Length: 251
Image (cartoon, rainbow, N blue to C red):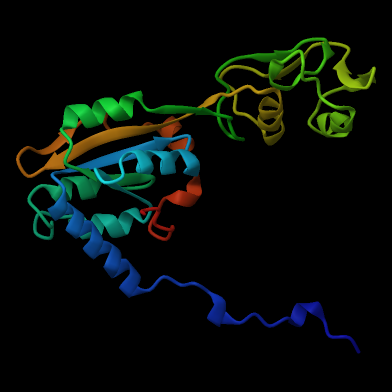
């Protein structure tokens, strides 16, 4: 008699469980950076993209260090009370370090650091759940990739476009609309199908940016900059990069 697939044995030795030693090592690393750099910044990320965050790290390589993820462990390293804080005033940083927030260490002057982060933005395609920033209507006629007249969608894309909600027909081998089609309205949350359509036609509605909450130094203590992010901004952060049990994204 064939063996049931339901009886498959999974070896627990393959699970990658974080150990107390791993968290302890991260805490010691955070403390060492508190000693190495003059300023400790608290930041949030809007429209999180790993590639964009890697770009930020690359541009600050050698002049700063960024940690994002495992916020509870990082907060414990800083010290959450005046009695346990690693350095005077760091408990104020730790108390704000909840949810999708990260730490950035540097010795660059605050005005230069703040100016750099305020100017750094990377447009990208919106994802399901993001809010539409404008109305997007596809006009009657041939469907174009990236709104480029020289790049109509190929006939092979017609089935996929139909699955995404478009009522198309092939005209001279090009998927076309007989009537205009509204993909989204400004302010509404995008569905997975709407987000995919926007990507196919080249409409970028998301902007990656790093938002500084504030910074700490031994001389000035905690100085608030832009303050804590709003609920709408937190919705734009991927849920898989924050919290105590997430992978640390430091280099």
